[in-house]
Image 1 (spheres, rainbow, N blue to C red):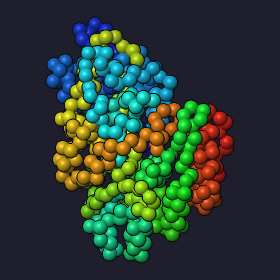
Image 2 (tube, one colour; image 1 turned 30 degrees about the vertical axis):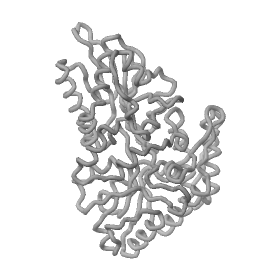
Image 3 (tube, rainbow, N blue to C red; image 1 turned 120 degrees about the vertical axis):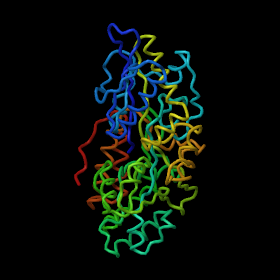
Image 4 (cartoon, rainbow, N blue to C red; image 1 turned 120 degrees about the horizontal axis):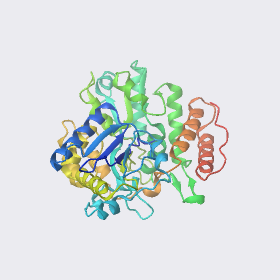
Length: 418
């Protein structure tokens, strides 16, 4: 899974106006919507053009004429842009006589929006990394050392067992199970999630590592070490309430939890398998949303949109946005200060992960049409594992076959019945 935030800037000329006007449409939650409004107000103030950029919640359909960009906070967003006339980010800005250095974008984020040549199609300004959150109070009560948090899935199993024995009803839970437990099981252990392209595209997440991991999770589910509350971020609220002791979710959640929980909060790298050759906890794949430019609009509108994109690329603005929204900074020019500037940083591991120079492009699912359809298939097949209808190998084989067929345009079979 990935939280897909697409920022649509809607360029629309205002009749009788002496200056161009660009609208930013989005469906962000209230906290992040306010952060976006504050950035837009700052841009308008510094540019001396009050109201030149106007923020509008909703109206994110792509059929509106004029120069456009869009921000959507759900997986289906990537399907909305499929087949649309998208203007590549750097080319669009350069055509308006402006410059941005997209080479400074973190490789993991660049991969998320790259075209076939590795060039970013959009500005990945709303991305997050998978991390492990833990309730220090519950772990301490169960006798687990909170200074030596589980770095591997085997150690997490030990902690979950201690918590269960101590009477904790929900030792471990997870949001976004497809993203955390399939996509990142691939990247952390050098296993491809998919391979090929076009009609030759093949899903590959039924390797021994994937089967091993899902078999372990299945055993936890049966033992009540592991509980699930939904296919998206439903588990976030259950952890925040203090019911669950450990949670895997996005790093952006930290900005919401750090001052809003009644327990001592901890955060660490996503666990991995240290007995798999070449495994690394920092080889995680981000998910999120980006600033996309749609074709259209007159010259003045396009230039205004390019000015706003250049504004968003400034390190100080990136830091302001990252600290207010919880999303990752876009470039290494802003990253170190952002991480170091947090009062309780998700710490150096975030900087390590997003600055990882090794490309993960061949190991992860690429943005584009079909992600939501694929995610639905995976949720269905994972559901058969939790319901003890299919063993992990059978469920993953079925998910690979059904998903590959669906992504290649073939007929979609009836969903699995849990």
